[in-house]
Length: 231
View 1 (tube, rainbow, N blue to C red):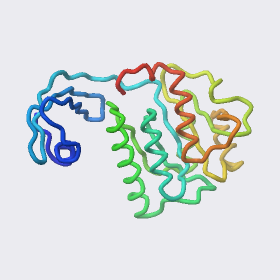
View 2 (view 1 turned 90 degrees about the horizontal axis):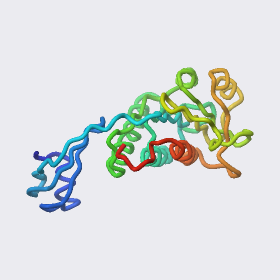
View 3 (view 1 turned 90 degrees about the vertical axis):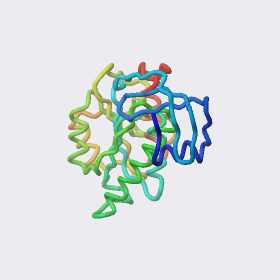
């Protein structure tokens, strides 16, 4: 197998991988090839494939409705969510979001989030790369909540902690992360009507860019997904 293009250049020129070193190749959709570098040339690697495996899609699926934060905090949230194992990241234009993607900005912003997810997935050695969807409004967000096996709205004033929620073994778990100004009463009512349950993270209030990754970590730690197998 010859690894060329951007990945080949990065592996041979930036990482300077040499013959005999291990390299894992994935399509981001569950297929992983374990390889050894046979030869290294400028811009490409020649690889010997040792084994191929297909990794089942992780279950339960974790989707994060991420209210769009301002500046580059969105990319930070995507990177962290990818590293811990989120499967789908939905940019959500919340009522109190300072940043909202409009026109050409929507495509550019989604592209940046998708690139952040891809790079973080490679660094994390994930067999399944997360999907970054189009920007969702409240109607689209509530439809996602309504179709979930379990939907949790992060609320610092909720009586029940995320860690105490009973999780499904399969299906989709949706985590709703509000903006810095919090979820509006109308949004809270809409999510509750769609079947979402409010839950808190702990005694402190986290930023919109970090609350999702903490919630996802708590949820995933209580499933079989963090058993050391490749994802």
